Image (cartoon, rainbow, N blue to C red):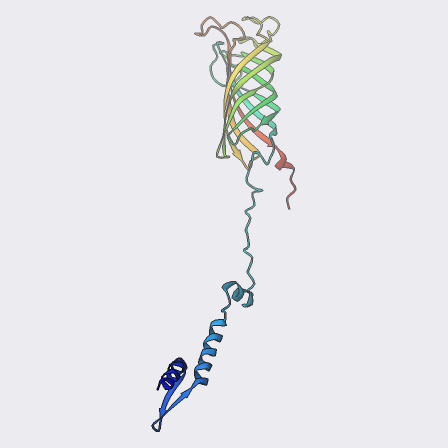
Length: 275
């Protein structure tokens, strides 16, 4: 009895681990199937799934299309840095003049104004400039001639000017404002007497004009296609050039000039070849 009990105790683990079947009233134990199932489960556990990186490497590579970058051409857009710090200036214009203090009012004298210069554009909206110009100023009584009441008075003052724009303000690449001083040296002077029309330049009734003149000016200009400028400049003498006539309200004679001018601005962009 003890031997049978001991035998059953030894066989219980094998019976539990084996597959038992009842068929035709007999008990059958199959150790092979259970062993096969254990081997299949071990193989399943040993199989390792590929990682995402390995799957990415094994997957067929798709060619990436390069993004086309579009560049906007700025050749036609003015750029003060690209075009250089220094710019050349060429101007020609017409002076409409009068002299306050000579008793003949109105901008009736017309004279030429021609000059060259240089501009320093140190900021997008700011610059300074200096020029040297030949400017014809003067005054006259009237345009008509003849008749018993004709007035032949006329004066010519030709100056070599050095206009210095202390401040040029550029707004939206279309408009420019300027403020500055104009020292000038008188190089030619002529005057004609009002009644007879004779020249009295050597001994004028009011006296010889001052050789040196200093004026203040303000200008307003329109910029056309970056290089071409149209505008007007108003200037007025700070120093009187000589004494005023008796019937005037000022203490001396002063130049009062409106200059209508065309100006060309030359920079690096002026020399670029068009493709």
